[in-house]
Structures are given as C-alpha cells and as structure tokens.
Length: 286
Length: 308
Image (cartoon, rainbow over all chains, first blue to last red; front, side, top):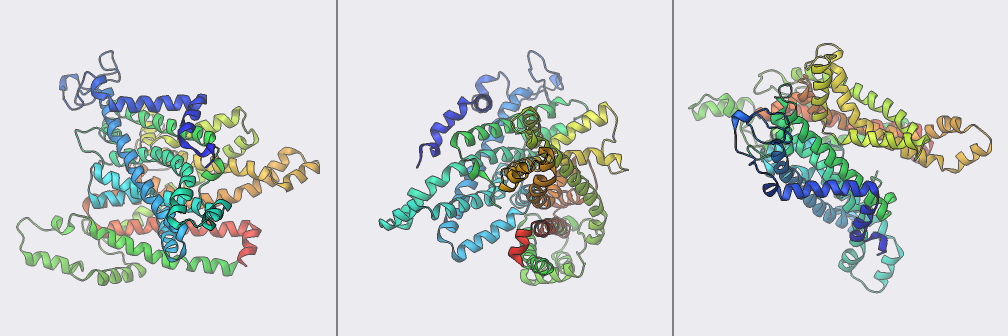
C-alpha cells in the first residue's frame, strides 16, 4: 500500500488546500452545531410560543421563527442531527453491504458475479428517488424507512465500484506474488485487495452522503421522513412549503443549509481525491 | 447495425420481465389495504370477499402475476381502486404532461450542458472554466423541490412572470423545465468537459495541429465530434433520471403528470395505479438505455465494428 493511498493523512492534506480547508471548516461547524445544539441554543426545538410566530430574523432569533414561534436556527441545528446522522448511517450501511457484495462478486466471479451484476444493473438504471419512494411506501414513513430506503438506493453504486476495483487489482503482480507465496483467498481479499480498493470507495461514499442528504430532504419534503415535532431539514421544508408566500424564511434557510453542506461535501471530496491522487480510479464504471 | 439493434432490443425482454415481477411483488408487501378504503365501517366478511374476488385479490400470487402481466401486455392496466376508472385512462392523461416536461428538460440540459462543457474545456483551468464548474456544482447541490419553490417565489410571486402552478399553457412549463433541466445540466457539462479534454490529448489531434489547422476549428469540428459519444450515451441514460426528477417537480408545481399520479396513488395504496406508473417510468428508463446503446453504436465505428 503506497503512502498516497492511506486515507488518514490525506484528510489532513485535503485541509491544506484553501478550498478544502473552507469546505472542511463548514462541515466541522455543521457537525459541531448538530452535536452541541442543546448547549449552543437557549431555545427548545419543540416548545411552541404562538405569539412569537412568523418573526423575521432578529438579535433574539437570528434566523427568525416558524409558524409555531419556534426558533429557526435552533430547529436547523437539531435538524442537522437527524439529516446528517440518517444520511451518514444509511451510506455506511450501503457501503458495508456494497463492498461485501462487490468484493465477493469481483473476486470469486462465476455465476454469483453474473447474478450480482444483473441485479445491480437493474437497480442502477432506476432513479434513486423512485427506489426510495417504493421502499418508504413499504416500510412506512419515519426515520427507519428513510434509512433503509437510502441504503438500498445507493447499494448498486458501491457494489459496482468495489467490484470494478477488485477486478482491476486482481490481475496485478503483487496479488500473483501473494498467491504464489501460498496466501489463501481470505488473506488476499482482506489484506491486499480490499485495503487497496478502500480509498476510491470511501471518497465516493463521502460524495454519496451529499446526495443522500438531498434524498433525505426530498423524502422529508413529501412528509415521509422524520415525523413532527422532530425536525429534519427535509421535514422543516415540508412544513415551510405551504407557508412559502407568507414566511419564505421557514423554507429558505433549511434549503440553504442543505445546499451549502452538499457543496462543502463535494468540494472537500474533490480535495480528498486530489490529495489521494485517485482521480482516474473515481470514474463511474460504465 | 440492424442485427445489433434487433439483438439489443430483444435483451430488453428478460429485463422487462424482471422489472415487472419486482413491481408486481413489491406492492404486495406494502402495508395498508385498499379494500379497507372501499368498505363501509362494519361491513360483513362476505362483502369483503366479494370485492377481493372482483379485483382478483383472492387468487394465489403467481396466478395474480400472470393475469396481470397478460392484461398489461394487451394494454389493460386494470381499474384504479380509488378513482374507479381504467388505469390506462389516468396514464393516458398524465403521460403527455410528463413527456412534454421531460423532453423539454432533456433538451434544455443537452443544449446548455454541451455549450457550457465546451466553453469550460476550451478555457481549461482559466476563469471561465472555474466559473462554469463552480456554477454547475452549486446548481447540482440544491434539492430540486427547493430550487423549484425558490424560483416560484422569485419569478411567479415577486416578478409575476409565470403562473405559480398548474398546467395551463406554455408559460406554466418554464419554471418546471428550468428546475429539472438545471440538475441535468451539471452532469452533461461535466462529462462534455472531461471528454473534450481527454480527446484533445489523442494522437490524431496532435496530427491535426501539425497540419496547421486552426485550434478552434480542430476543437469544434474534430474533438467535439468524438467527445460527444459518451455525452449522448449519458443523456439517454439520463431519461430515467429526468422522469424521476419530474416526480418531485410535478408535485411542487401541482402539474398533472406521472409523478403526481404516483405520489397520490402511493398515499392511497391504489395498487393498479402505482404499478402502472412505475411500469411506465421503468419502461422509459429501459428505452433510454436502449437508445443510448444504439446511438453509441451508430456514432462510434469502433463499437459498430466490434458488434458486427
């Protein structure tokens, strides 16, 4: 494993680029706001004070208040908890399952590989939002449904990417060397193939987390995500869409939070790709 | 080429069957029974059995599937349980709206995306490239429903240029097309740019430069032609995504289309309508993939030769 492929120092190197540092700083800020929301805000996310409803941004309420008089910035911070954790956990599940499937298919080949490829190609051609909508319809609205829906929607992507990486690496001389030294399948797979396939998969997982945040917001917008009073960026916009003309801030700020966070994830991912020097390996497998 | 086209089209048959089984089965796992919506509270079990028999819900699943598939193939998509009308009518009403929206959005993303991609590639790593790629990144990271609502606020409410929602006339199409199109533009721009830069490094381009042709002429007449091959493939694959994006945007702009039909039917547990609209979307995806492959073969002599 070359030094360039080691992820941890690469994160630090990504921070050394100005764009990477800016994007990384925003992501750290959002994550910190999500974790420390109860300490940072004097307000509760679910206590309604109707006489303070529909306030514009002020010193007391930096982003104003919603239709129930709840502080928008506070709800945005608590919403980050739901949106970020649901998206990240869903992608983590997706990556773990996708890597297992893709590695097994790529390494062992044969009938299993063909079956995986057919199923993956089939789901690959379907828009994620449709897969997610169907699954949420089956499981029911709420955080669990969204979690499963996002994991399944991105499964094809990681299976495909891992399989492609394993297929390329399998033919390399160092694998042949390991095998001629008597290494077993398990050793080759876990000590040689997977560690080398890790960097592109992890970076694409990070980029997919950005897409997942948008998908979570879309499902939330349809009223299928976190149920009230728990805020998520999507469910906040769902409530805000009916009040678009009366109080645009209720939908404007959660949308901006989604957009800026996803932009930051993309820019930081780009900086990571540059730091890891894996641009050529990130091409979506055709 | 014709043989390839026929062979490639035949490959759709197993895919169609697989997709139809999934669509058929998935909906039987959905909790919530449409019959509950039809029965009056306190109805007798016989009334229930009668309705189940009328919709064929009492037969074993494989039989239900074969009956359903046979009907679908003969153009009978069943009767909508809630709307109590033939599903084919509902689809027939929705489809033109979705096709108009999707087609225009696809045209928008191709024209704008290819133009921006070419400009970015010609100015690689200079400010026009950075500005375009930055703008494209921003455009692709906004949730489409949010972008739609913000444009509605800006252009319909504040400026009053377009109707807020609905499907009356051409002006009501502008904002939905822009909303979907902007998302697609990002991908097309990126692929055009990368593809142009890659082709420009090929040997034949060096030769053209050596012949003394003007650089702009080389880029537009020779490089672009080669660079467009992956772009066209991606655009065709994108048809499914555009219809997927249309689902959200149709709901936002309250347009009668497949997306609105699907979302409403999902909420009402109206199986036949959900199945039919999913099948339509799936078929659009499959036709898109087919078109992409055929266009690629038609444009790229190497692919054509390999297939002959």
